Image 1 (cartoon, rainbow, N blue to C red):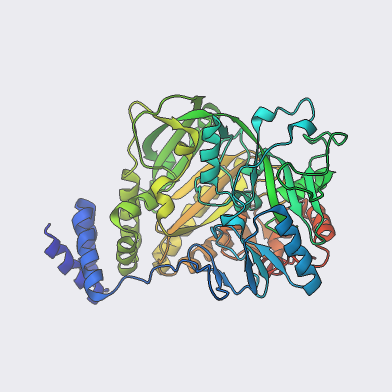
Image 2: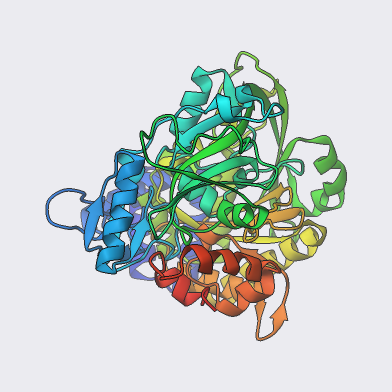
Length: 552
């Protein structure tokens, strides 16, 4: 097909959307030669000014700008922006806010898609640019069984990517991590961000100590009751923080509340994280169908350190769903072999190469199951198997890579792993029905991962081996919120019908309700007891806490 033919065909589809024959012709042409067809879509989009506006970047200088998340969907108007450079600055900010009776909220990279950060009229604390370094571990205060070689301490504003670089330099690695590495560690940890692997919990599971500035300006170093610090050796100071007093609090309830607290207990200054010697990961991918793999989940999970699935939510004519399996095994640190595109963000990887706005324009022009299925299959084809397995240092295998640059968002559902097959099939059926009935389509495969249980009171993975179901959506698809809202309602239940499926705090889209939280988390009262103690005045409350009625 010539590009001019593709342009003419796409113009016909745009101008006569009810012409089913032309739609089918376009989809057949796309399946045969996607590059030429997308070049035609791009040319038409540019000539007619059809591309959506770019997402704004946050202006951080001059007059007090609004805060916006990474895709410009969550916004608030702070009273002030503050960029603290030391622990003392955080204490001063909180003390000043208390005297003025102002709310305070910390922000990171803005990667959350819910209203976790939204606080109009607040002092907005942005440590992303200034409190973003590794800091010393006080080895003199550690208990004998706490190995300082496997403890890494960082300030709250460091990104996961920068943390990985620092660990690389020390020949260390994170035990597990999520696929996106542009988040600050405080944002990732505070929302329950996870990786995969039935032996590995979410990132918060590897926390050893949390330094938190509370509403009174008192700074606590929070650890489990049997924490890494010897109270008799603790000096009441941090190595890099001068004369700022720090209170050691070794209490299980405080620690399990602070591990995943969504910024509601105070302003985090630093974390001590359990790490491990640097290691490599081998990765093998294979194309199959969900119907073929679902009966083999147990042996696959038991024989693979990190097992993942990518499933096309739209069935083929024979009723099967195209699926990619991703099997990853941990190895001693090994020289890398070859290169590949990230499995975690297949549609985003493809969009980065083909042009995300072009794909969005095409999908919005043809919002039908057959075209969405074809696009997702093409994205999955972008992830070929490798012989021999691809091997690299762990974080380079786990990360999304180039897909980090694509504007996309997702709804993520967490179910008991024992119910994986039922919940995945219900999710697939819901997408299929909404696609057939309303032409509401998802622009991406469904990502399936498995995560060990967490002790954190409000971790989405709390108390059970968890299957996570991530529903990825390119930014700008029509009816995206309507679609994912209906999926959340169908899978999570409502009106007293609790399926036990939770929603990830950062991938929530503001769909979660107070009733959901009460049903999902048995330890909510224990979390609330710590919350009311550390945030008694409501200094750290905001739209998120009010929506979920966390104060009770």
